[in-house]
Length: 85
Image 1: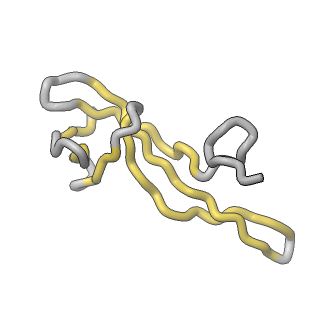
Image 2: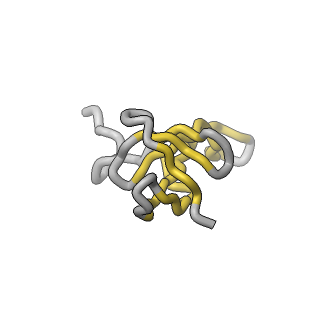
């Protein structure tokens, strides 16, 4: 039986590796999560995990693109986000 990813009982496809506090154009504070996939691979010592692709998303699940280290854009709306330092 095929098990769906990121569902109870299934292996997670990616993990949150960093939470980035950001602020939107209205001044509201949001949390931007950076996810990274981990790919299992076989080594001489057994199975290990290698870091794979990364993606950014808000807590709401909206996809986000990085502009630079301090600025981000919500893909669906084009709204700009700024890192809170």
